[in-house]
Image (tube, rainbow, N blue to C red):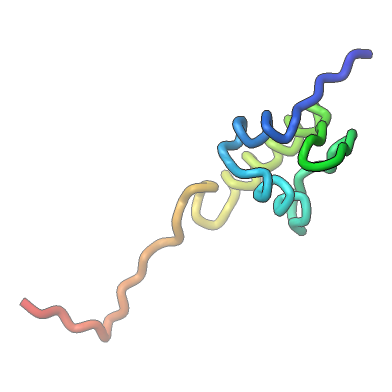
Length: 87
């Protein structure tokens, strides 16, 4: 069986984020990012590509089912009724 691996750099390019963000996602309560299978000194780690794809599918499902309808969606803006409008 041949496994495919993704490096930290590959993940940063794939998800358009920093390596710090990858490691922060590993500590989340809900849908944590998978741990690297091969750890090296510094930031050269290797992740199983299949595990990353599974995480990504769950993350897409989680974001589609989120309260505001997507990972990049902002919460609805509410305007307080006590705000006075000056004309």
